[in-house]
Image 1: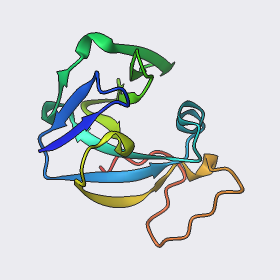
Image 2: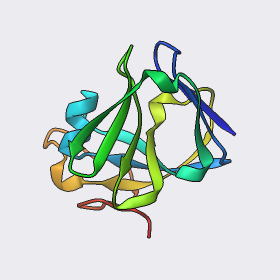
Image 3: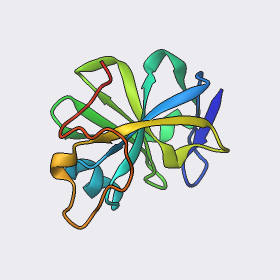
Length: 134
């Protein structure tokens, strides 16, 4: 089981998986909403994700039609993302995970929107747009 929480600790969650599949996302929306050059995101089965504390503190922002980003209303940590196109999955940012869970980084996505000053220095697969692993 993997545990995670927001910055202030009022929202906590668990993921019933042993290892997370992770991609680095360079899309403009992730960059603008995180303030970073990319986001490390895990694609998680909705059935294995559960808010265990502070569901009442969650607020949603629709960053584009059909894409909801849930945040802690107190510290604004980005908790998870859902889309109408992937009803069985959600995405969680790795920075929220507590401890040292096992992760498998599988590539870079939305490289078409990567800032020119950001270089990719590994041999992972590169996807110009979204990659769902299917």
